[in-house]
Image 1: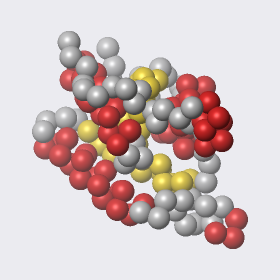
Image 2: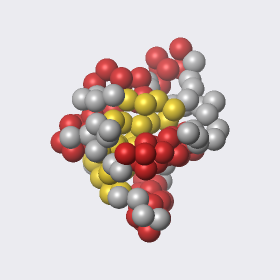
Image 3: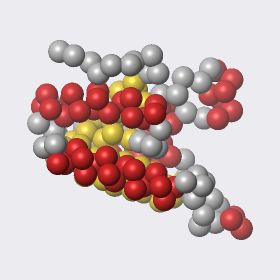
Amino acid sequence: MFKTIVWATDGSEDADRALPTALDLVREGGAKLLVVHVDVRLGGRSGGYPVLADEDELRRTIKSKVDELVEGGVDASLKIVRGHGDAADLIAGVATAAGADLIVVGTRGHGRVAGMLLGSVAQRLLHVAPCPVVAVPRSVREPATA
């Protein structure tokens, strides 16, 4: 069904919760898993510095997780994208370039006001992604079972 599935992660617990769903879909159809992490950079005079202070640690953690997936037999690879734009737009660009069939992303569960103020990568992906998006809500605790 799917040939390439993108799992977008910022290294958070919310993103990690979406991984079992992505893996279920990968294993179901023998797809490749492309793990995408966006290293958003500050613009202006602060240009070039990551928005997240622990970016280097996040990258190591995510790379280690991808290595574990590969050791476990998953056809997985990691793509780290640096940019100044919106994370969702950068993820959509990677998905387009990879010819992805699906993007799996976790949600944080912000309310309406917080979502408007803080933004939502999952919500924006629904509008800019080149393929379907599976948004795994915070209420999902266990992987889906068939």
